[in-house]
Amino acid sequence: PITLKLNGQAVQTACCGTASQSVKGVKEICWDPTGSRLAVCYDGAPAVVVYAVKPSPYLQFSYHGTVWGPPATLPYGVQFKPNFGKGALLFIPFCHFDEPCTSLVFVPMYFI
Image 1 (cartoon, rainbow, N blue to C red):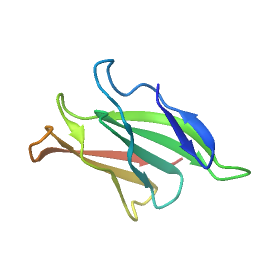
Image 2 (image 1 turned 90 degrees about the horizontal axis):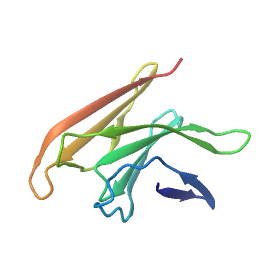
Image 3 (image 1 turned 135 degrees about the vertical axis):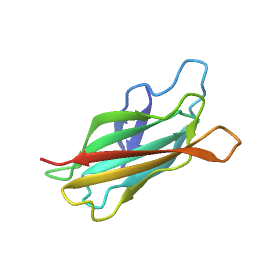
Image 4 (image 1 turned 45 degrees about the vertical axis):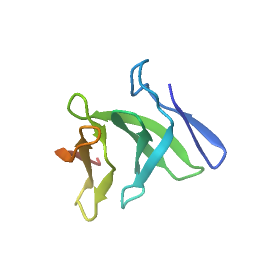
């Protein structure tokens, strides 16, 4: 498992790599425009971890899922589309290590 610390609070994620992979820390964090989803891209991890966020009465993070790309790829970054109606649309380009990105993953999240 990986532990993410935000404002002194530790949040543990599900494992997003294999024992042979080295996950070095957080590479990129992206909040969706509504503030209710957080996507975390870890340096060296082959997946992006998504959290549901509740801002009150205090900031709460709950594991929401892991987004995997094609085999032998790493996420290049994460971005949410603004104004996605009733939810959030996560966009993740995946690249084959030192080659140009060839895969795009779109993850729609509908809020009920």
